[in-house]
Image (cartoon, rainbow, N blue to C red; front, side, top):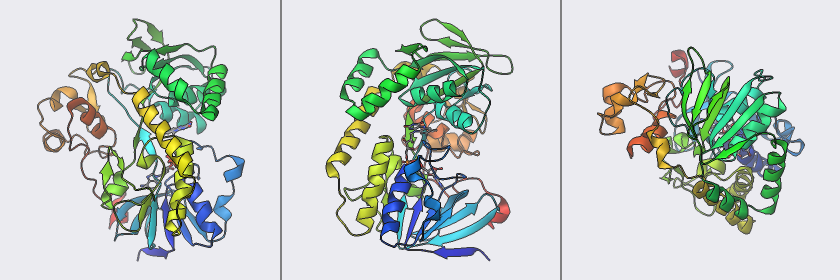
Length: 404
Ligand SMILES: Cc1cc2nc3c(=O)[nH]c(=O)nc-3n(C[C@H](O)[C@H](O)[C@H](O)COP(=O)(O)OP(=O)(O)OC[C@H]3O[C@@H](n4cnc5c(N)ncnc54)[C@H](O)[C@@H]3O)c2cc1C
């Protein structure tokens, strides 16, 4: 018999958005079930644990924290089925209100050699290092696009790795425009990051054309003609909102993110969304939206509308300044893997007309990641509007006995 829990509110996501919402909801005595598939609260930015002001939240009265629990299915408008990944059990949770704070993931693009051991996402590399992967003494390159490259380089360097270069595809003019529009606090953060990384070349308007190596990464070919010998490459082209759960629950999406109104209410009654799943904008946007969503769920008018407008403007500047250049979509050749779960190469996909056609003909997107990586890639490369398709339960692979 599946275990069942009930509360006033369910919150999915223990990153900054979920944390800000929880705090506001508990303050007024709401019973909250808080779900996250990681082992500790903090989300992507605070993987090693949140800063002091946000610690010890798990012990607050009224809160049931379900860590290492992944939402795998919906069982009604605001009822969810979870996979307890530590115990390998299924669990059903229900509440009249649900907040989605599911964050974002990295956007990947294929190029020859991108599946060699030693090549990871930029944020993925940062997460590995924060989790204890021994990077000391290793020669590392961070490449792709966006501020996450600097944050990841900082983590690698702080843990003893040698960052040979940060390779940013955006043009210098776009970067200068972005820097000029940064609010004071963010400009100070960016300057202090650059200062800590002052010995590291920052190559703008440049990208990795090819990664080479026999059994693992040995060197990189850059678009400026440089050859760089290294052991690790962290590469990412910005972030994509995690919208699978919202889509499964029937919430409308807009521009690849969960569509919300000024109250952070989605198109489905009782379901709210906050943070990077509603659009990329950084930690300040997530904290603000979490708090505002909680206010709306309590029947109040969300406060700090001006700061929210500023955070949204920052998100738009981020998207336009780090927009992908067309050359990046032409790096993969016919033999380059696009779907790495099912070993599908670019050459095989060229004959397909749509995402659905590709799934039927090649099994693209039907492996472990369920199109989370290759869905975004084929959308960019082929303009397939139906990629990555409507998600189906289970959202993540689960053992058969849990499904049963
Ligand atoms: C890999 C990576 C590294 C990053 N590093 C930095 C950094 O160093 N500095 C910085 O300023 N910004 C960083 N960012 C940007 C970061 O996303 C935001 O600044 C901030 O963490 C967003 O907060 P959030 O609460 O909206 O989402 P997140 O922090 O992403 O939190 C969402 C949480 O929801 C959980 N979740 C999602 N789906 C499910 C599900 N189905 N079931 C259960 N749990 C689920 C996730 O595991 C995650 O813990 C990073 C982003 C990524 C993708």
